[in-house]
Image 1 (cartoon, helix red, strand yellow):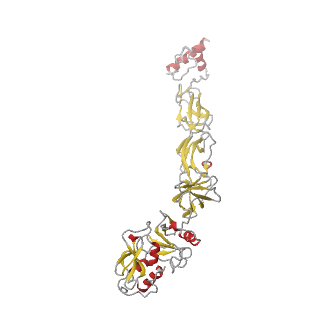
Image 2: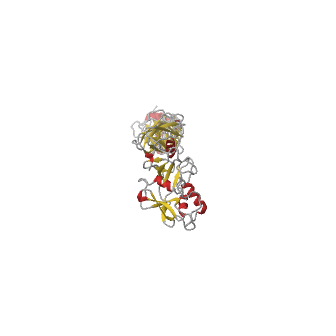
Image 3: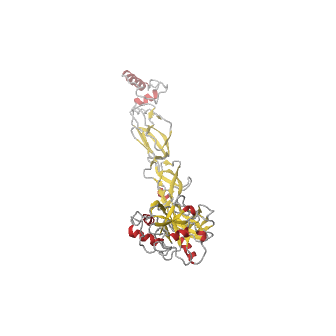
Length: 529
């Protein structure tokens, strides 16, 4: 035993003399005194080693740069959680691996982690056994939460929409985009969200909607965003009235129609009187887009009736119609003539104003006033013998000439030769026409009356034409205070003799006198109706 032990000592001494640094060999196991050097005191271990028993590799650990539990969100950048050996760096190969590549992958060599999904994975670092150190491993847990989706280009509400009767989409998603999910839409913040095509309205109005990004498996939804002021305008529509103007008698009713180009259930038509002193107006219910407007006269006058309509989906242009309420009796020349021929005493209508349509009124006749009712002949008497069926003489509202000779000279001192021109007859039309046809340039006064350019109402007696009254027609008319001019005397179409003609003196209210043909007087034309 002693001899063997001496040999072991000699071998150890030889190793030491040879410069074997047991510390560099990291023979930690057997280092009884803890000085990291296998020396003579670690006899048992050394004896085993000298006799050929493999010396055990040193143990070591791996430590991560970050904690052993790492929290990340989907979409975060790649990161590295380096593992560092406690000893023997470079002694062995260091590698990494992920237990769940659906959550994260790791570069085996560098340890760089790439997040691939939401969830939990374990990242393991391994270092293989080296020349002097044993292998080692460590793990850390990676928790990946959902990322936040993002709207990269927001949707908007459509513009310029007009009611069509069909559903229209409210969302303009043409340029909208997002990341991390799908853009979805709802009419209410807590409603069911779906595609943009599901957000529709039909009726005119102002609307709103919500949108958000519905996150995919790796992203949370975004908060809903409200879009307001999305409008569908009412469709323009028109109202057409049945005629341009309407007349009715005092205390009578009349109707006209209003036709709507478009209408729907619930459409209402309103008729409003421009002056309820004259008449009231009411609109009937629509039937086939037509409303009947009823006018009830209450006093004489003229005012516009305004017709409008309201509807949820149509916008109507307001229109007006002139409404004239007339007296109980005749309100036109035609009605007055009928009353005369029926034997009615119509003298109260002398001086009534006449317009170009043949309407008459005591004053303020509608439209253009052309003259006055100057004479009513009677039921069996023509107002002018040459105008068959005439019963009324209408005198013009203004002069045809203010100062003009009866003749310019050719017939100055001779009778005209026109049959009965000086006879006291109701023949002003025949006299005037005869002189005009004989020599219109010489018979200046007759020509002025004949050429009076104001239009005569149609529908009366024929022929209908302006003429210069005869003496007896002037005698019958005189001058009513309503239309009496001031300061003028007026020629008649009746000769007294070869050198003189009858004329009317205004200041004497129509008294007839005579004068030579070279005097200058005014001309006031009349027509027979």
